[in-house]
Image (cartoon, rainbow, N blue to C red; front, side, top):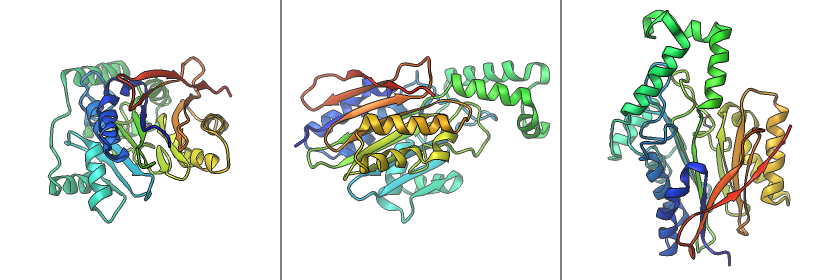
Length: 315
Ligand code: GLY
């Protein structure tokens, strides 16, 4: 039997203990990944997830999250969710209670309210400051962006702004991926993010798309992504990694091929993934040349998370 464990991305290390505790007490992988993700969502210093998340181009925070159960492949996802403290728990409610997999925008918020999910303002002094600095940098003396200034056209058509956006998205991305295997051999995976910095309102990345940014299946393993979500959507990256596991590759080989697939798109931006299989093998990978790939591992016999190295996949 594989010892229960939980893994997470770079920004999850100090919060995996919450999931490890649940696993140690015999709890489910699903509860473990939700609990650890909730703590990341409360971290005021992480401007890529939950509280203090970088807003969209209009200064509004829109959150995306998914949670998936590898035993049943039941999934819950929310996109462009505003005003709730724990997007991952709204996604969990979708998994547990809704006859749907993915709810977005006002519908997701209505559902969350009905389910009694905790509402909250995720804006902080830091997120406001970061947003204003971006706007000042991008628009110089063009002034404050508002709905009346036809900013969408400027944003979409101006080559300068597109370049500015691409640079920004590369420099200021982030998402949390957490996945676990419990004592029953069940696997679960969770993803939460405020999405790419200064995105168009209504933009969904890979994180709320089951198969793109998150996928798990007890028979093989789990995979989740961070980075430029548009790339993982185009390749169905998380599901593809599971497909590679299904075909006999180990997590490192599967992650390597999936990152090669990303390079093959010749798209803008980088992609990263973390992967586990149902034998307890784990890995992370990145396509970004100058970036070290690392992830955190915490099994039920450990007292703190251990940082592990992943692979850097060149074009
Ligand atoms: N990978 C997160 C996003 O693109 O929104």
